[in-house]
Image (cartoon, rainbow over all chains, first blue to last red; front, side, top):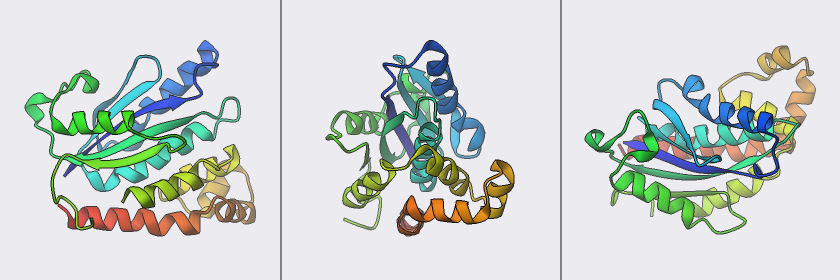
Length: 137
Length: 73
């Protein structure tokens, strides 16, 4: 089963252009750190939003935590990220490998919706586009 | 699952930059000695950082999440 992580960086509005570039680099570098899990590249859009497709959903929480740790570790700005984790099957015919965020299909829709419905102060949520795809309620 | 993630999130939100640096390495499977070698921070400080960052509480949740996801395939 695959997973789509959708997120946006929290606290990025006050960053200098240089620090903002560092944040984008950190988010994008997840594809280099987890090359076997991240399909293609991490898509960063609208300044502080990002989305990635994972070939293996079992890595989804670890990568979400790693990304947040990588952002929070920076003493100069120490930003965080909201993350919506969604599991499901992606129809690869609907996946835009150049721009993951322009992909379509239930898995991408559910992940994006999960981010919109995250309630403050929570920064992390889980959902699935498949019914009964995991063995817990 | 969202209840467990919510509690996990509460812990993650409290990570300091120093704790987050240690956790980033730990999440990649690095040992305390390896992180110590890379950062120049003593192993005992790394260990203390993991404790105060709630890693002993986070690791079982992460492992359960990964195990269950493999079962769900």
